Length: 461
Ligand SMILES: [Zn+2]
Image (tube, helix red, strand yellow):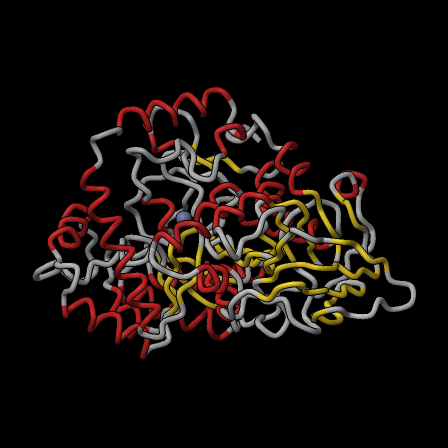
């Protein structure tokens, strides 16, 4: 699958230029501490030569080539641009009833993702697929600042969720038509949802795979094991959406209450979970951790990653109210959160491709950019070391997208997607919040300016 990531962006608009600190050029970034995304431990006193949109070389005490500009980065650290795979361009409305759904954040979200260090993302579900495709192309042309994008179809589903933005299908044939329609308008991956049948999933996978595209799912009616056997490529939300442990589960039926109860009742060291993990790894099914969405409220940030400042007043009020009402009343959330951390790590330890995504939806607490930084931190809370946490959020995402030869690490001849942090991330994962410059295709953007541009407007534009 080609996402057009290598397209040159040489005609930046005035708006895009206003966020640029370093135009495309020839640079030697000197004396950095680097976590290169491969999972190796930190390397100190490293120089990185960026030539155009590529990394020309990485190493200690490199000679400054003729015509290159040396920039001293002493005291700073670098990681590859984040590659995150569940990054919607929408945000929940502040209306009282959930059925009114979500609004497109065309202006703020692409900026916030880039500000948070995301240089490549998959949307994993859209409500305005045509808008997402147009935004992706405008970013590639340099008209808008933002990450490179794999645009996912709308959530393909039968009747059930009741969200006004989603258009359900009522036959497997119609589902296949939708796959081809969305692929024709420029979508490059697919997402299936809660109420599909096994026949639907098989047909959707076959149609998408025939076009060289992948399918992910936030499941409910279908178990993870069934989906793996039917050819799905990726499962969303760790094990939170697994219905595999409902006793005598009725096929093709979604029962959310029984589903969450079955996970609460499942012992954390259950052999049934170990068997499921083994099966998913054997079938090459990637697992997306969106553990940040399930972060409990008690004694945790109102907006994880620190993004309260980005919300418009009404959204701020709604999110704060919910957070306050949950203080001391989320012990079940904690229980499932703690178990899930163990299960997701077990999947990784068993050889599974664990990838990351933030899913900015639900109750409005998840804000693009800020949530990405928080998710990186949560992988360390999950028990990964810092190098592994970075790898999951960079190289693993690139591998899933089949782009690991071009992006995902700081290595010779890769595309220059590099986040420069003011603090040393090799010592403390919270340094992820100190981004200064985000290089994307060799162009250095100011993280602060991008964050600033989206202050107070998330929820309206
Ligand atoms: Zn989602």
